[in-house]
Image 1: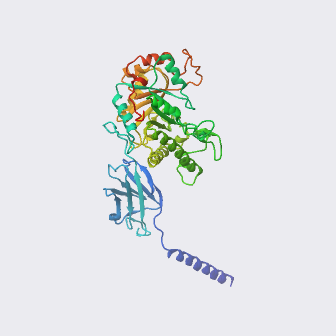
Image 2: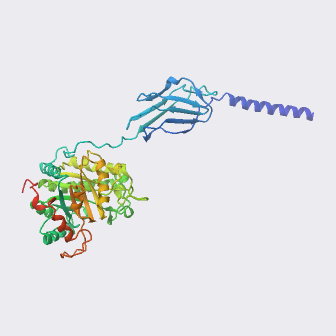
Length: 464
């Protein structure tokens, strides 16, 4: 009896197990599963010379209906299968900056379990932007769609000089006091043609400390016939709600990506600051004063020129694409507000082509140069910059402790204009050992007839 009962029990267990296996067998087989693929759906900046797209499945596969494998825009493909891998060899010469859609339709991929009829996949990707190729002809028209007469006249004059003569320039201090210009004028008898003002302390304006809406210093300089340039190192709070303002990356939490995102406090800050700057520039436009406008300089920092280098200012902290978007946002907003008196100057750090906002948004290229005692090294930098921007005028927007400008001209390094940096320790005596450009330096520079000073300038302000 015990033996018979044991047989009966084992029989019941066996039937149960067979029943379980039978139940599994009738479940619908799953389609092949992708374990890995070289390009996923939505991938951006795909190199145009990639040889193939590789897709690895969880099982051995074979071809079914290859006609359901398509690539749009239409292009010839060579698909192959090796065990569990589908390799789609792409045609040579994919187009730059193009949206492609690879469709693996039903029946393309077969496997023993399912026959492949229940597997489909779409992989959309976008190829990289085309390498920048500068135009062969000079950019003689301002990027503004309808520039003021004064701005276009100034730009035309600068192009007429370019390659033959160089405009001299000097910075004012952060409170728009042009003491260095007056110091140069007193001890040399000559006055630089360009004075650089700035909007660095925007958060203090208007205030009893400094008010950028009081344009008297700029108006007086323009009335003398001088060329006005304005720089903007955009200072922002170190954190939300703070009254401490900085522009260095390490001293503020503000980042460009946040500025460009609607609903963030940084975005509201951007809109408010751009509104203020536009208002101030319109004050100058009402006086018919053209401006060499140089905002957000040195965005790339030394990221490309030094090993381990990085951006210095917050507007370069997130890399090239967000910086360019910020620049273009500023340009578009100013255009919307009717600001038409600007000549847009972008500052290169050399080797930073990907930071260039584009020909539609930049009139001139500038470079900041310090501690260069070799004309050979200066010529090398000049050659590199002109290789990529031969259609744009190039200026030296800041200089300090650099060999005499006539040596630059002798070497065919023909800056459109140059600007010496301010030494805040200047006691304004004739023999002050200026950190950037002494009176002796200036006398040597002014002695060259190719250096343009205030007395050589035509009148650019139609009200004067």
